[in-house]
Length: 338
Picture 1 (spheres, one colour):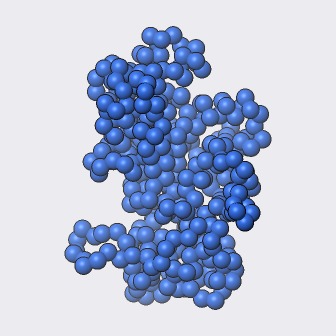
Picture 2: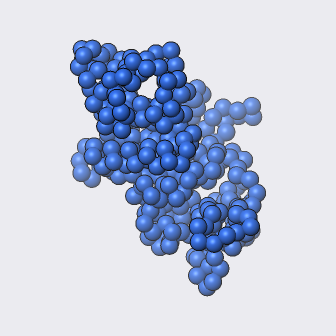
Picture 3: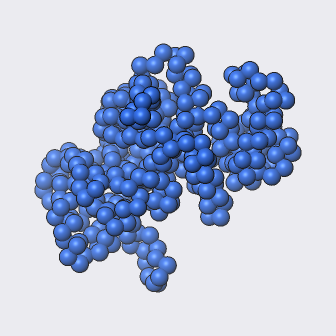
């Protein structure tokens, strides 16, 4: 990989899944890049396509899925990889932290067995060397008494502790790309902050590229360099985290930001985006957000907008310049989606 080659590159990524009436599109034309040491956030409501994007990156799409476009890791298309190369990519190139560790850690095996199996089978380490590395990695992710934890079963650990074990298992494979798929969903707020802090520090220390998937836009802005907002299987806005608050432009992004509770004043009710989120295959021929957007015009329902540059970011909206002008003249982002 040269300095100019992204660690991860998605170009025109589309996914269709089999359905009763034929293939159903769940992703459309996803274009994203990620460099080594960079953190990219994927944000959107349930059904927006975040997790399916993660599955496409790992090459673990459901049976019968059709893939369009390319997913390149260090310049190599994973769809064209030989089986042995694909296994190495999954074993050492990419690591994934899931949102529910209890669903991905065998409850009948001790933590030590879970952590050391890959080291002894795939790396050729002896049992003592594998245990020593596991102990060191558990300490690195903030687990106290790591020697004792190796002898415990998953049910003996808290949710936050078990998520740290999951992170440790990923780090033991020494990946260059870390995928965090809503890793804090099942945790309380205090533990969420600790887990996110661990992921961010490990990314910095190890120079990992990280894709951080979350429903929480504020969390993504705090952790990531750039944030991509997804809706109905499409990217609708990409912008640097430091500029997203001031320069957000897509009505959906503004709706997400406007629906947050404020700490400086009391409100009777939180502002909400009207309507319900739609899946990619439910969207009409125009803009997928048209049914929920206060700025919709006939053109929005007739033709899908392109993801185009706007004020230092990328935005998928026919009327973005007009909306920006209107809101700059005094309308708040909350009003933009009322």
